[in-house]
Length: 111
Length: 112
Image (cartoon, rainbow over all chains, first blue to last red; front, side, top):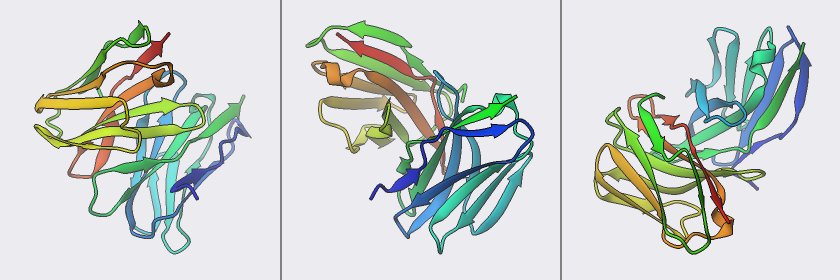
């Protein structure tokens, strides 16, 4: 089992809809969770961090964490064509400075 | 993060040639990382550093070495490049206050 798993997609949503991206992780002592956005040919860009159970909102983005079920999700409201990118989930195990990345979910927002 | 730069941005080399990639940062990150990114594999950690002259291996370190003689610079060396090392290489640094990693722009390396 991979340490961090994501559906590779592509996930296609119409413009204005809510895009829901999911990620599961295997290490129960994981403490920090991150979502990165990566446009084609560019480097990953951090868009959300979440450390405790529940929801964290930042503009059109909401990260949701459920440690009991070992999943973290990212919701993008009012999706725009500019949101079309690959979204990487990343997990840091407590006490370590190394982060494990999922392989990413490709999101396509259809105008 | 504009505080992390990489050079060169693109490089084409031949099998058996030594190659050094440079990462330079102005953010005073203590922790620095080198990743490679390949289709189907995502980002994989090659080596990381937790201070000047303090480095350790990641999950795909074979064929790579690193050096960090000062906080600002973290070098990745391919002693004898192979075609399997054709990839995009990213350098990253950690903001320790929030344990968030920020990436440089990447280097696309092609080994012929």
